[in-house]
Image (cartoon, rainbow, N blue to C red; front, side, top):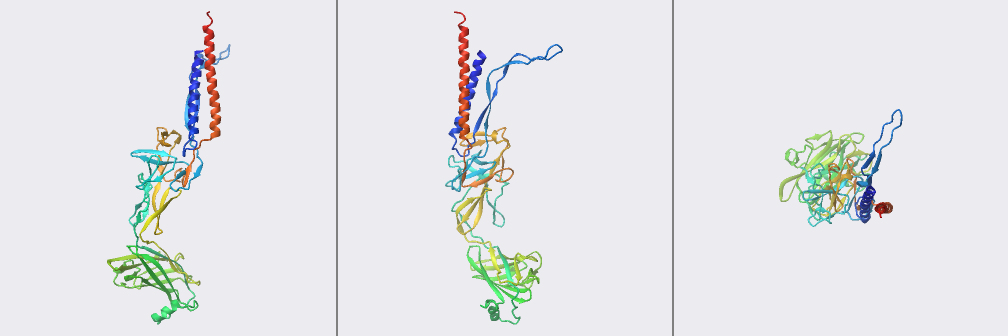
Length: 464
């Protein structure tokens, strides 16, 4: 009878713990990033009244006689299934679709969370505004050419999003040409004067026109805009002349050898000859002294601007020899133009966006988009083994495994969704059903104690 009393007590305690867990699940039904928990029971050690016996020639074997001493809590498991994603429209809110946790830091302490209700503080740090913990990832760096890149193999650092910061002006370094020169037009006579050439290039009648004019804006080191004009005209079959003008610049020189204005043999030269195969593919470019016939065909334009004695330079990319990716010569309308240049003036960061890889891209007033940072994700061999630290955060434990930190979308890590938050994965119908079962189990165990008490009273009443 005493055994049944203690068995009933163990049942009461265990069902009370199960009710505590259910209550915690229900209270967090609307907590972003919360993961529901469950309690599993196992029976306690059993007292052996008689051991098992082995069968022999006369009689068969007998089973052991054991009396159980109650129940134990086997585990309180975290159910790490995906919660539903809720749209918030706030671009600093993040949700993980798939495996992984955001990494946040408090000094030297590192925590992990699925709750991505983040914001930018006054110093530009990307933080959890509820507790001030800083979101971890990798900020962008400048390479030797001045281009921004993100090294996801580096050490984690506090993410900084510098709203309204300046993006310095960048001088044009490359101008790309594409499209077509009309192979059907006649060549300009070799004895044509400059006036004749201009008339042939700009003739209002397309049937009489023997050339083409295009322009593109380029930028110097201060971000000043300068219009580069280019004139094309046909010299002879499959050979065209390119002539360059750069607004408000002096000592303009075009050079195939890549020495800029330093090559005195072509100093002041502003013309190139471009040759094509009979089937319209570019095969060479020449400045009259040097030429290129293989690989990527390009020339350098060097120039000086008032007040700056240092020559500036950028490259003209005309296409690859034998291919049709750059300038071509087919019997179609003139469409050749400079389609792209990589310079820009100074600008201010006005907004930012976050993509599925967690890359934060800044949008500047000059139209430039630059990578600013990348949010890190961590996954674990056994995420259910993490320790709960409050504030919907976890820390690693002896059984969770070490955090495997890297980019979203790689090595089993999920994708990041901006403008959404992950809801709790608590299922109320399951919780209320478990509540009913737990209540009945608690009541049944209380009956065990009451009945055992009545039996003890009967024993005590035997002597009256």
